[in-house]
Image 1: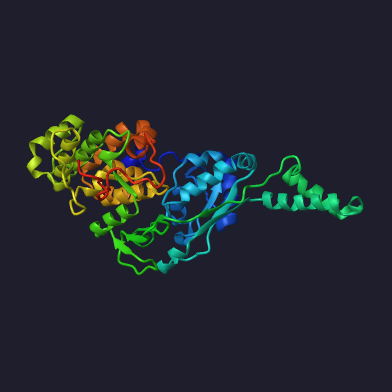
Image 2: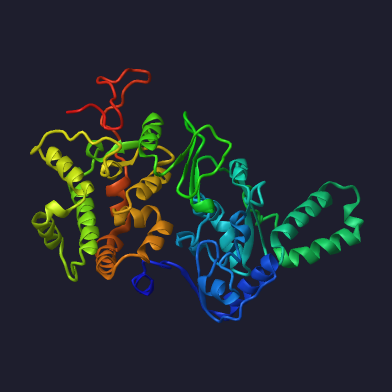
Length: 442
């Protein structure tokens, strides 16, 4: 894992905290939230204020996320909005935190100039020892304040100002006036410069959770289901699938129109994307054959694949047939959901759940290390530990050379969606009937 850290592929883009003033503010917030403090003079924090160094110091990687349910956060700067969320237990948590920071950026900028802002992502469920409780999580509410209670005091002062302006003879209420002056010294002029954060509540519809080995919960779709990456569970939802149930998962994704074939996606060089997936599969096979790939270029990988095509797995041959068809050099390959290459040929459709679907596809097609790293880092880090040196070296070199240099461009090329050239009227039938997620055979 050391090489991942050194290349910025792990713990990358964290915020460095090394000034005594910021460390002191962090400690005040940390003690307020958890009763703990740190003796470290410098450390790094993610979007939630979690520090892996402090987690190691305290011997508790969940010191800001007890029981992995209601995530607490410490904001020292609005710059944290670009940082990752480490050890996320829910796929929605980072998006919620980022939206909270961006919506309240001006207010948070003012507050963090003097103090840390601490808070919690609150829902009605505080313990998920029973997996059925996961389905009770419906809304996430954010509660936040500074360590010194600036927002609480600002609300109290605003109420006092209202009382002062409406109450008869308030000018003669010396106690009220004295209390207002005392609070105003801490909060500033709340009339001209109101310090107030937007009340924010988020619906937790479809999401992934790391609990119980990983569960994908889709309940805001026409045909709801839960997909388990871990052991069998009993959940209060109509359909419970496991990642081994490839046919049923394929049917679920198709029924709810959550995926689209890469070869039919607009604005995508499908052949190039599929060839890159084939390269990743070749590297995986080379690892099993103990072939040294140090310094191997893309040309070397493809030359190796041609020489040893008979030894490559079914995933490679399925994608190869699809590339040949896409380039007009072969017939349409009928890849059913039973074929090992099937989920490598799909991407999330243009729906609000696109990222969640791409995360699921990364788990179903784990040899595509680029999609795995982008969409499911938790699984990427777990699998990385068992890879041989050949594959580790290749993966690190590829990600630093071809992904890190243009993350946004790579994400858009792989998962972005261009607007269709012509919209069909609402309710108009498609000109050709749909035939599974592949559409009509060409």
